[in-house]
Length: 568
Ligand code: HC0
Image (cartoon, rainbow, N blue to C red):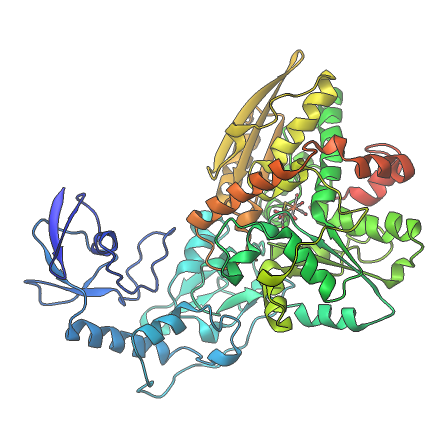
């Protein structure tokens, strides 16, 4: 342990603790910008400088470890002036069009500027006016807003192992670009949006589709249906002052009905359906010597990753479409027929925690209903913006239930939103299908939690089913390399693109730190408990769907509507 004095307060901390961390221990709040609680220390922006007694120069508190007896001052006139000067150099290169910026009100630079009491930008702005990159369906980059903090590069390289964004040149000429290219669509970006979640400003954001939704809601000739993904209900509240982990399902349904959606349905329903199809596919592969381990297929950033980087392993991926896409295909076929609505008049909107879902919806093979199965995808953040725009107060809304029939789901569908959830849901069903016995302990706790790599083995009569769960693409790479080398001794592997699973998706409210993700995961399992039925094969509407329409899992209709192929 070492003893230091920060602003004359004694602090005792472990050796190796940084000044920033030591100050936090006694609630001294040093400003930061390139620092992110889940990332490595970068020491790029220098806004966290402090004075250390006996030293001529300032020290960056985020990357300076304390020494015994150190005397630190965080709030002298000299420090305040120096921080303001550093801010001047950042602001002069930043397109400061705050009033019309996507991050207005939720921008770390804006907040810091206010906290440091910056009243003017002293020098002529040198913003280059570079083109905004809107080259793809998911992510927009505005390089004029970029403050070169390096957070997006770290998440893309170190967490996702994708490396679609890089820094080129040095010093004043430093640029953050999609490698040596101009546009994101020119590189192997998987559209996961993790860069958005860590960007402190409005330099990267989702392609906004809000206006398209307002327009279809005005169009009386359209029957507009919306589905809500499992992870949205446990995070949206954060944008409205609810604590992380608050469950606001009924309020979201109430809002969507209030603004005019004809039906408000639940993606958890098609998550249940996915379990029936995917579970059947797994058993079919096991019995008939199909390719194992089988890999889950519902996370579109993950699908783009394997298509780009390991196309030779695509035969391992389940052919099941994601629940989002199954929902679209069924809405424009079964639902349209059952309720006598012309599918050409149906508009399917999805609300997803995910930016890659926007690109998934426009993949050319996702039109098995004869139309584009899902028409418009909004992120959780876009839903939040719509609520704000409408001026409806989320907290005042009385909870409303989902519509029938696609609003009926089970706890197994609900847990899809957290890493390990798809696998747990699958095991709840596969166990009972294989053994014919009731699974009493349905919680597979070994598969829960934010760990990057989890595994379990489940005895089912005389078969031991071995499974693994990974989240974050750098962990997907580990699993894929194991498969290539013949070391992946598993039957079934769940891969989710985003760290923590969909609750950590690139379309979720910002901030989306590990601390917050843990709360969202807890909430997902609380949603599970709240359901009377917690196994997908007991979902009565799914069973009716098979009876009336699909006939059997992996049958002709299922293949036509619920399964897909990949680009190799
Ligand atoms: Fe997910 Fe999904 S669980 S990918 O994270 O499988 O986005 O929430 O909607 O489709 O259900 C996202 C979340 C979904 C899908 C489901 C799956």
